[in-house]
Image (cartoon, rainbow, N blue to C red; front, side, top):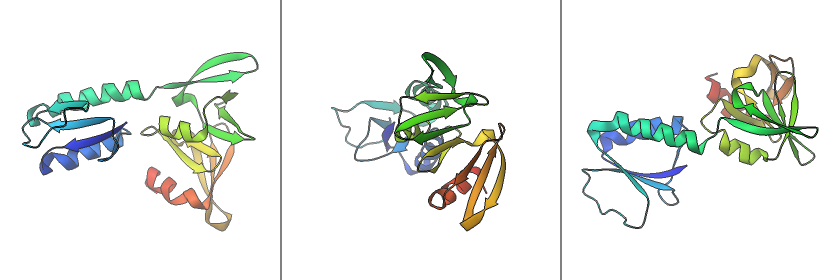
Length: 181
């Protein structure tokens, strides 16, 4: 969800940091909602959806944003195996892979087909434990057992199910930052 934030400087950094960790994106030009501190004396747009908050009730404001995030970002995906559909919790997924215009979802021992494209999954999984590591893979960093330096400045990820995926050069920096490496 994209938001525009109107508040005093003291709260700006605190709120932006909190919301970015939750997968919200700040965008002052194209946004879904305006987050507005009540006691700010600025003109308020009357034709936009706004959420107003006070400095004194930040905890309640953060709780509301967390609840909104839960609705905006589901905790599962539907996967298809043969002719059956399954609900797959994100925490059970090791990685997603795109091959021949089809997206696959891999768990500990199963492989499913997903209707979502990788770019859609990337948006859905923002703020969760997933990161894109190549044009064709998004991985769950909580399912990585080992990270091995690989040829040409790449990394090999070994998962708990012993599957292996290479982090391509274009994605190494973001991957390392996301895990604090």
